[in-house]
Image (tube, rainbow, N blue to C red; front, side, top):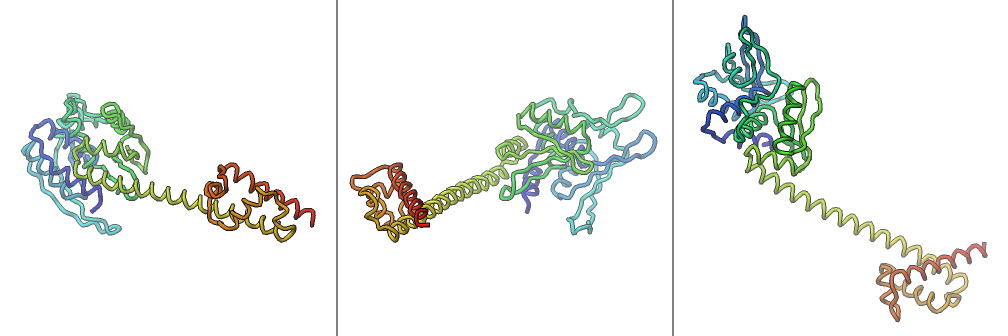
Length: 315
């Protein structure tokens, strides 16, 4: 089961007794997963479609609980691209419900779509969280943290998307952003810490804990890989440098002999040949008296310069 499905299944089990929060959840779900259809003069029908059966059951329950409305829940098989079943509810002449949920506006004569956030519905803190929960249930998705950190809320209106961004950032400081995909406006989060905060806000606590566990393991694995890569790079660098040192020492020995070197250079040359895998620091500790890493580097550099000079004279 995907992380999106797990989180939505968990969220649908949250039961709020207050009518205000039930309206907020319904308003959020219908805003992003509902479709309005003309049903005659001044009449709007509502069609709600979701691929998550738990979300469909929740909408069914909330409509019955909040508006005493019994709707028929229809399951449809989606054969396109082997997608899952979809669940659909259809409500005729839903003007009153849509107006109560802040999705339609009525000016006394006609109904128009309200593109803005329904301020009357999200006055209380509990209702703000419930509304975001509804938005996520209706049009949210969450990537598995093993692959990437990404949470998005799909909306269909630019004005509403900008309102949603401002609402989330002003109330919860999550730094949400928006992008477009086809005809949709995608409000998204990409920082793992912010995603965890969002899950906490909407009440997906079990999903949050699982998400955090995977994120921590992933971070530890990445840290280990970085350390291993760094150590591998250092070992490679040490091996390459040692090879160059020994090549220069062998060149001097074959050309003029190591007696050509002064005592200090000859000492470090012999130690280097005998310990090809040692680091500069380790070589310095083998000298009597011991010398520092910079001193070893200076002597080996001098040997390589001498080897180069001898090679040029012979050439």
